[in-house]
Length: 300
Image (cartoon, rainbow, N blue to C red; front, side, top):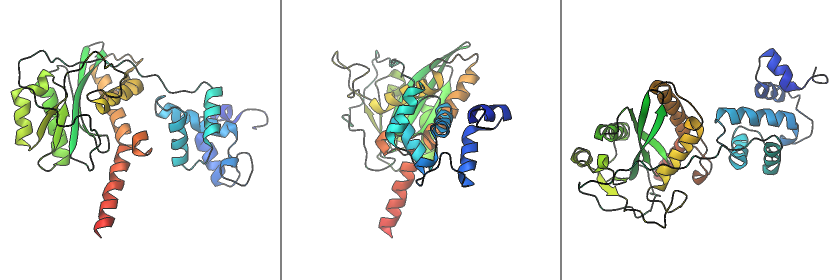
């Protein structure tokens, strides 16, 4: 049949996955183009089917370097240049990030904590340095505000809260989720901006109750912009950019619940499966699990 019709068309008519068909064919020993090496068994058409499937799965977030790593992680041996060429030829590329929008309201008279981090965003172990921030998502029903807490060791989202108003309860609930899930030892540093929600007496008391130290970024200056790698909370701002690129940018949400589900689905994907270049192309959870396994081996 494939002499008459492309495999992708046949799969569409038969309502089966093209990538699934090629995986089945490879397991049967039939190959996808001959050759001795595993990479040579994939014709351009077969490889393109895998690329398109992954591209749809990650909602257009991967460029060719991360796509290549994902293919290799799935057992598909292929060269970087071939992946780059196929994606370029067929117009498959990573969606561009939207411009970062600042939500911080630092015009208040509340006490401000010192900057204990000084842009050193790479702790040596989990549960030593967390970062928090707020962003918002437009829906036809109004704004939906999202507060997140990220463990900067493995860039894992450990707590979050989605609410209709941007108040202290939003950030406190995200922190509470993170604390109950991780139970960090006393002394953890929580780093954030100087927003009124984080500076509030209620939130600062919560930090003290859970044995955390408060750290806040200093005020910006005219030489720093949204593209600078020296931003005050760059890992969290980068996370917002990825989230909005993958699940928000270009989407229209009729209800807050629709937006909520889109965000939660992506956070689950981000934690469990999204390959992170700064983590050696592992997902945040894979990176942390490998660290704990290494600690156990060293202790044995």
